[in-house]
Image 1 (cartoon, rainbow, N blue to C red):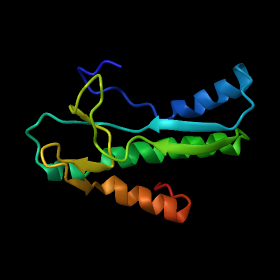
Image 2 (image 1 turned 45 degrees about the horizontal axis):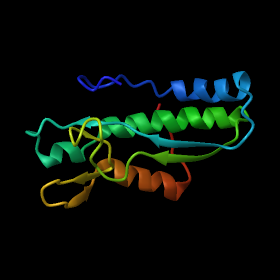
Image 3 (image 1 turned 45 degrees about the vertical axis):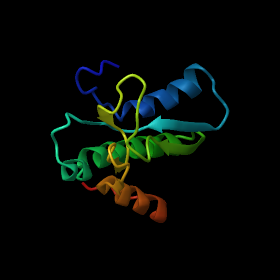
Image 4 (image 1 turned 90 degrees about the vertical axis):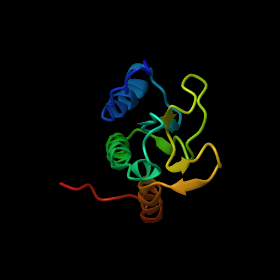
Length: 134
């Protein structure tokens, strides 16, 4: 993608991709979704607390998991979903400018602090799902 601006997000597209894989390409093996997540831009002047309140990431993940569950209801054999990423990290094409983690990483001290999404995702795993808010 173009990292000069924040990429657009279309979490509902994962549903279409699952159907395309199975219907158009006749994929008949279990599907694992890897390295999927949402970013936060880091302009270097935001306080750490701004990164910890990552409601936009939670909203994105809710939508992706919802659409994956719909694809599973349609009979698509989706066996796993791997959230990208546990920690903010260095990405080859953007360095540390974009933060993907559900844990904030202070790149000077390497201290890691759970973001709001880490607590939310822990509950999703603990409860084997979540309720969508209407």
